[in-house]
Length: 343
Image 1 (cartoon, rainbow, N blue to C red):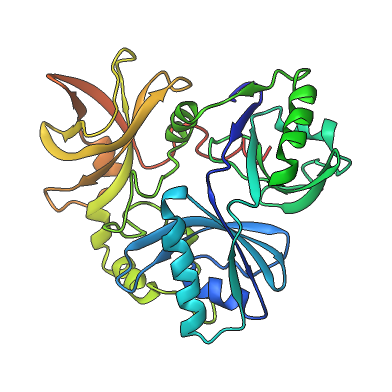
Image 2 (image 1 turned 90 degrees about the horizontal axis):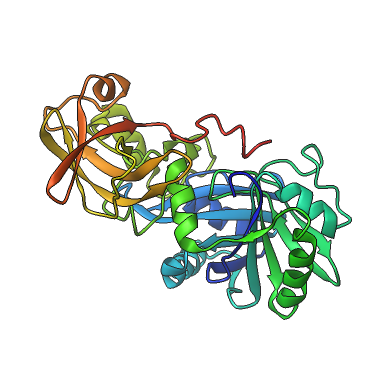
């Protein structure tokens, strides 16, 4: 995936079609980001409760003025569905939510040669100008249509294909045949875990959950505080942002300096010999050359967790009965400027 192109079957994801005159208003009220802007665009967003704590982490693609496609992790299936339907009722909105999880297979094509592969199987121009990052449009592949979304969960140029289930094998066969000339490889969830961990991408229910706030997990950039109607949890989020209390508890990326060490989950994180957190999720980062994970670090001294706090501390991770030196970062250790995903 880092050098060529990989195919990942993500059909287990939860998928919902939200349609109707008020569909955009319903989803915008739930979403921290503005998901009701231009059509044919996907938006990464979170849903919060009134206290500003996390409830869901997902994407919303606007396919038309009254048609939206919501994708969430499989473990949040019924929760996300219930949140949408509850919001429709509370707003007395003219909208309907349909569970289409089984109606669409999801095949992700990820890696520097992903564009090259898709250009071989569709008549649609997949160039960077014609199909920029965050585009969500139908394309043709063989005898099928597929919703193609340019987005990534591995930190590379990539696309997600949502294919009518009855056409999934047909499209898969075409991709495999065309992929032989670009070195297409099948990629599993363990590899996905390694790739997303290098990029510092979050996984709701694993390394963040409903005990965390948006700011603590580093996803404040998704907030649009200028939306006309606001969003659920906005008042609490703004209050936390103003008092800066959240800066004493933050989700950080942690990499063990020894390339032989392995992290899985629950390893203790130390700063200057004092326990400040534990590893919530980890994998081996083959590109970074060491075990890498995410840890919710709490400042025991009351200091703000910022660049100065990180650089002035001596960081370590305890794995079993050994303590290893570690590197810590607020920014993704792999491609922090997002150059590869927008190439």
